[in-house]
Length: 337
Image (cartoon, rainbow, N blue to C red; front, side, top):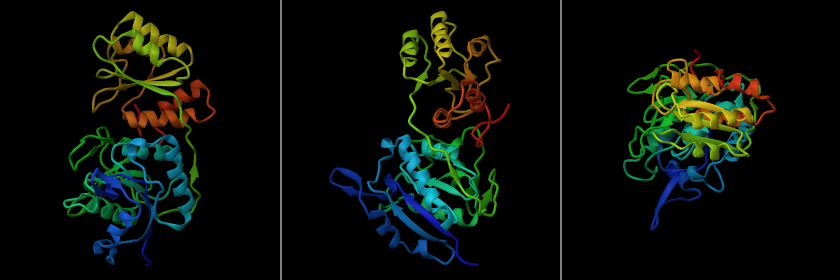
């Protein structure tokens, strides 16, 4: 059997940074040089791989929807020549990119794994070697045909992941969905399903930047905050509510939200809680939101809700169709009722 071939896109991030007088900085060619000096990557058990370093390399804090499209098109251009794809990315917005790719990459039949590290690959005690080595091995030998996020020996569904720890190696979590795979002493499939790569074409549906507001409710929040967030050219807003989707019974605040809905703005209700889902039928304080036309975000992460809105708003959909699709499970991003 020929060895599998994996395409590695290094977009930037900590994993390929080099130490300087000003701290760690991205340096062209540094990541590839580090990997070449690590014999573990070239053992017989490992797949063949090609590293494409983006120019310029980006800090993930600077990522935009246009950059998500660049990554998706890069995968598309190389799709026929490789068995799987590994995207090296900074951790700050890694979950956003993984979520966005899950919506843009349609008819995906090969694994796409987004990974990175908390400590640069060249540094002592780096988690980068383990994350990259395992991502390559899993992509070649455990092909789960969806966008995943691999970190600290765990493969998560990309659009279910969120950054949970700024400093620890266990930096990501999937609060409302089990991991796809655990790479312990033995590699164990959990929610992931393996498949042989198919030959049908990948389709990329591009996202364009969309004006979307995000507001977190807090005790005493002013209706003016909501009103300001709902000013043109805003097309959608994510409301981070309490518990199972509750909001204050403040008449002025509710009136502001209702006005936004009537003006054609899609408002999605997502819980502030780390785990759990929105159920606006549970309490009167949630039911009031449902009655004015606010859409349930179910158990989507903020990253999934935001990128799904970008995806849907980038298409020529009427408001009713878009709201139905928001509440429909498109890529495994939410748990159906």
